[in-house]
Length: 110
Length: 113
Image (cartoon, rainbow over all chains, first blue to last red; front, side, top):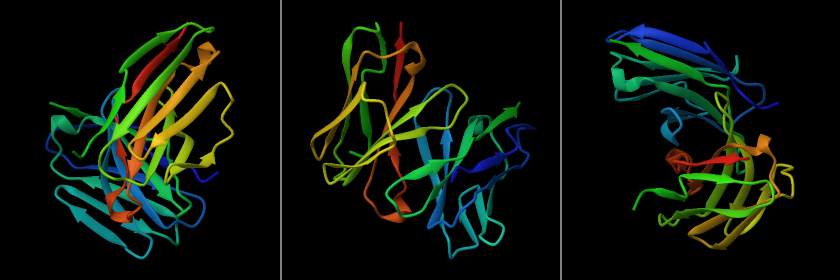
């Protein structure tokens, strides 16, 4: 299966701390994307990293990609209560569809 | 307009009913998608339309019937559903440019009784 595996499945941290989530996948990809989903709502595209890139930044987000290990990580710095959500990685093989990983549920404690 | 709009937001239907979910985008995106998401699970791809033509059907049961009347609209027709089909149904669109990712609607929460 192409589906990614996120690690950890759930993460609780204090507000202001950094949160790191990992994603592993099984086959070669064109790009890897990260999405956020607030409870019961639609998904929001956060950031995309191409297969020939190793690191990318967007605001408080930092994404890394290691194609040799077929893994990616998402770092959220200086976490806020509003960051509480589920985070999914999604892999794109350029076949007109993206496949989502199982997700990490992040809870920011006040 | 940078949104994908889904209606209705909530739907309760009986197993003998026929209903439709609607999705609309006015961003000129060439691809539209239906995903199904069960509680605490990732979204699962159901259908992909590219330039108004069905390009991918992920072996979805025939009780789900997609339709793309034009480049802005995507419907999902439902008939004779089962209680296990209860889920959040998400519509998404994309321009096909990598850096844009997908734009998702807020979903329709479907309950089959």
